[in-house]
Amino acid sequence: MENSRIGIIGSGSWATAIAKIITDNGRPITWWVRQQSNIDYFAKRHHNPHYLRNTYFDVSNIHFTTSVQALVNQSDIILIAVPSIHIASALEGLESSSLKSKKIISAVKGVIPKYNILLNEYLAKQYNVNLENYFTLLGPSHAEEVAAEQLSYLTFSGLDNNQTKT
Image (cartoon, rainbow, N blue to C red; front, side):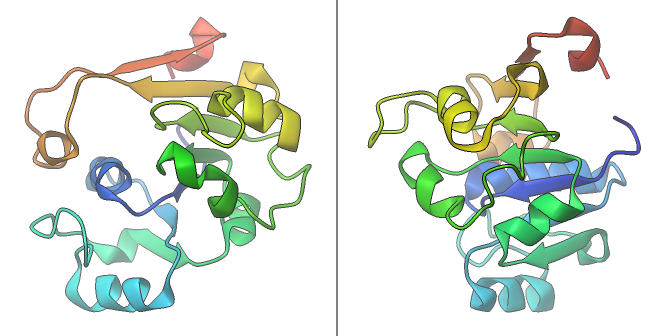
């Protein structure tokens, strides 16, 4: 997974913190942000206009997009970090087979309220995601702590232990 292209869906505090850690480690990302005005602000001021405003980025490692389909097409690993209530709208318009061969990392907390199911079940039903390619990132941490690189505790899990170690 070291040379894999990473895409992040979401632009809240959790997505911002994760993007900060990834880009600070020299990995370029494609980052889906819903509104172009937020992308323009971010590109000009190098920080998220709404969340973790004191967290600055080297935007040369970030390709922003408002198209979730473009992000998926350009990425091998898709990290989803949006509130569970907004999953369906965030993925709206995505072709049903788009995620089939992608590695999916969920940083989503809770169930999808409209369907009363977890993200893995939703993605398997809606997008034919193979659960062997589905991973979760979770833990009792706060985005502010992660972005500031303070000690925190996170768990990364998946069905295939070999893939979770890479």
